[in-house]
Length: 178
Length: 195
Picture 1 (spheres, rainbow over the protein chains, first blue to last red):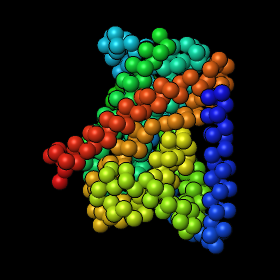
Picture 2: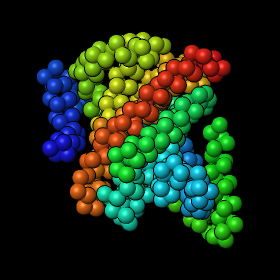
Picture 3: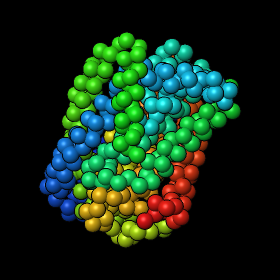
C-alpha cells in the first residue's frame, strides 16, 4: 500500500506540475509561452557558468577513486568501523557520500547486485544512497555559479550533516535490519 | 579549506596510483572526468531551462509568492536577513520541496536560482552571506520522503519490499537536517566566523 502510494507520487509529481502551473497561469491571464521562454533563457547562462567548477571537482574525485586511494582508506578504517556495526563493504559509500552522487549510486547498485537488495549490506547501502546530499557538488556548483569564493563555515556544516546522516543510517539499519 | 580538500583528493590519488604501479589510470580518469563534467553541464542546460521556464510562469501567476506566504512564519526565522517578500524565499522553498519529493533534477535549477537571488542581497560580495550558509546547510541535509532512484534499483534486483528503506531514510535525513540547522544557527550567532 505504502509502496504503491510512493510510486504513484513519484510517477505523477512532474506531469502534475507541468500541467497545473501552465493551466493556472493561463487562467490568471499570464502569457504562458512567452513567460516560459523568458525564464528558460536564464537556465542556459547559469549551466554554462558552472562548467569550470564541475570540471575541477570531478577530475579530482575521479582520480582519487580510480587510483585505489579510496579502497586504501577503507582498508585502514575497517578495524575501527567494523566494531561500530559498519560492514567494510559499505565504507567506500561513506567516503564518496559528500563527493559524488553518481559514484554512490554506482557503488550501491554494485553491492546490491553482489549481495542482494534484501541483505543487510543491500539495505544499508540503499539507505545511504537514499540519504546522499553530495555537499561538494552543491557547494562548488551553487557558490561557483554566483561567484562566491569565501565559503566560511558552510563546508563544516555540510560535512557534519553528512557524517551525522551516515551514522544515523548505520544506527537505524542495525536497529531494524540486523 | 576547499583548496586543501581538492589538493588532497588529487595528490593522494596520483601518489597511490604511482605506488600501486598503475599510474595510467590517472590519465584516463582525469580526462574522462573532464569530458564527463561538460556532459553533465550540457544535460543540465535543458533541465535548467525547463524548470526555470515553468517557475517564471508560476511566479507571474502568483503561485510562488502564495507558497512563500504560506511558509513565511518558518522562513523568516530560518532566514532573518532575507526580507519576507524577497523572491529568494520562493526559490528556496521550491528547492527544498523538490529535494523532499526526491526530484533531484528539479532541485538543482531552483537551488541555483535561490543562490542568485541571495547573491543579489549580498551586494556582489565574494563572501558567502549567513543566509547562503543556512540555505546550503538545509539543502545538503534535506529530508527525503521519496528516494525514488534507489527504490527503482531495489525493485530491479527483485527486492521483496523495495520501499522498506523509506522510513530509515526519513529518520537519517531528519536527524542530519536538525543538526545542520542547529549547527548553522550556532555558527551564525556565536562562532568566530560570524563576521
